[in-house]
Amino acid sequence: MGSGTEATGGGWSRRRFVGALAGAAAVVAVPAPAAPPAEAPRTAPRTAAKSPAKPASGPRPLYLGTYTSVAGDGTGIGLADYDPATGEITGTGTLTGVTDPSYLAVHPDGRTLYAVNEHAAGSVTAVRLADRKVLGSRGTGGAGPCHLSVHPTGRWLLSANYTSGSVAVHPIDATGALGERTALATHSGPAPGPGQQGPHAHQFVTSPDGGHVLAVDLGTDTVYTYRLDLAKGTLTELSQAHTRPGAGPRHLTFHPGGRYAYLADEVDDTVTVCGYDPATGRLTVGEPQSTGSRAGTTNYPAQILVTADGAYAYLANRGDNTLARYAVEADGARLRLLDTVPVHGDFPRQIAFSPDGRLLFAANQRSGTVSVFTVDAAGGGLRLAGEPFASPVAVCALPL
Image (cartoon, rainbow, N blue to C red; front, side):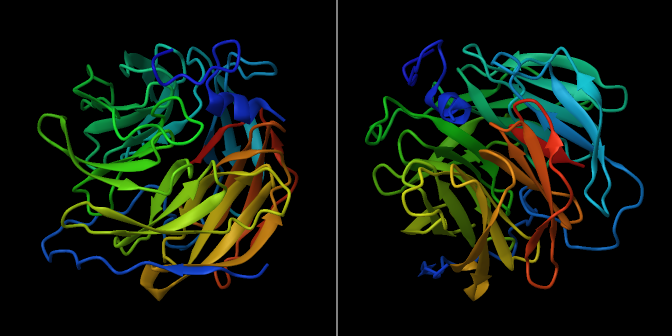
């Protein structure tokens, strides 16, 4: 499975094995980076919720990622609808023919769905949503792809190969289909962190200014900043930001102001505020702080989200099985832990906002459920919206 494999038996990587097993507020600020140049383009990140507006009427589609090669597995991409007012989910079937679709993303025009195929010979698949036709798959050039995102231009698909510690770029044509890979960057340095056997790319995303793409690597305790050539689809590494050794960074999300980002550190159970300079793409890592997990609990923070107005952040805690809520202060420079709420499921692997920001979905891997919460617009509080929805090995929920 490549030099970055952390085998646990049966060829599983550590990240898959971890998923299959089983207060007082800390305030941390980081120095403000240089102000962005006036001409810098601004593009809202996909991980932020849209500004709450008039609720959508009628059912909306929900796509569910799973594993198709583990015990109790799913059989493809789960299809469902949800009520944007109540959060109630209704299953509508399964899209078969896509194996181990553990992470999903949608094209900015809403017409094409993309899935990783988390295999030793990794690939990514495109699905046309109008008729749910599979448009084909392309190899990622690495093993165990676990994350993908679409560049805001809609022309490039970015994917992260966990097991081999590399990131890839594929072109997207006018139909939404994928072309042959245009770039593959392997994280050969720095050396792996404590307890790691190699690099493990866990996420590959575009900065809010649209000028840089960032790769989060759990194995090397590093976030890499690249320049993506928008004409050729090639990558040029610009800088590296290092967490403390053994932090195991997993997921990064940007504050909508574009000058700060928040990093969920899986291995040492922390969250970190980072400064971001849009002019250079350089990330500055601040001091780690609490995830709100209970003392004595083995916890692996998974994903962090920020509301579109930049007022609140939410962190999924796997093991503690909670969602932590933070107040975002000082224009994004500080996170203040407010509370945690039970996720009403086991091992929340991924969380996502509905497009209007009124609902938060949590995919609970071990319990095979999706929990839905209403988000209070005034105080950011979370309230469970009905009983969790049963979905085999739920590892990703994508509401549209």
